[in-house]
Length: 273
Image (cartoon, rainbow, N blue to C red; front, side, top):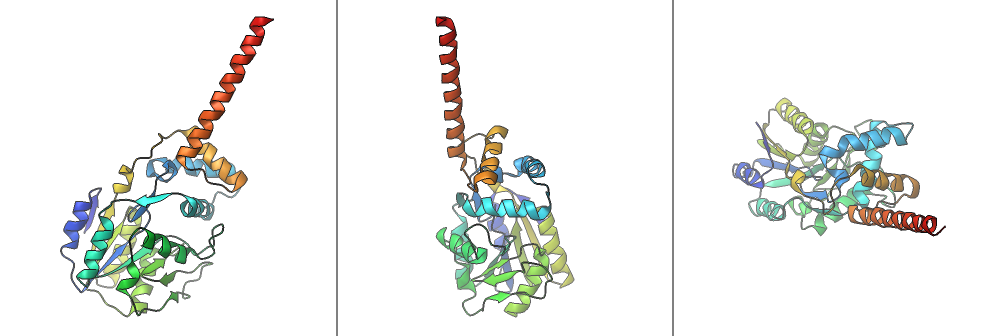
């Protein structure tokens, strides 16, 4: 079963059926936390893809992931819903095993040499502590996957990277030596939910997928404009700096004011002559 919703009430409803034979797996980005900036909104994704195609000779998926990961790690994150940390704590109180299955790669990003540890620390900063579900489970790199940056586990979090989440979940279950009767998986992407569903079906594990879309309702303080987003992305490419929406909007507004002032001054000079 797959539920599509932007209401956390539907998640709470599905979690009522969870018991000690259930594993609850959460995506991170746009489920537990999200970026406040417009660049992260799904409706602006095609603009981002188009910019990458124009800005880089190699506009591969790897390039998109590299740029996305950089913005993610330097951008300003917030909770998707203030209730979610309490929901996770409630699962722990009921002894229902839970973990994070994120697409973040272990590829170093800027000054972040270990994205998995950065992810764990960021989640902890928002009140999420998935490590307490697995106090005795050792860190693990899943080296059975033939890729540059293999999935890794630490403190209740699996960074899947370029490996499909279904495969990463299978590796995690083996590492944790658990065989849940049911998996409840919460992610914002339909294809990822379907991928994990297929893996669970192949393992004869009951599956409930929730495509959770509430992050689309998190509104930036600054309205979207292609000019602003292009300015942010060009600044990122040229200076390795990400400007939050508010700062980028302010700089563009100031630049426009300066141009207007210069134009008015030039008009005045023409009038005097």
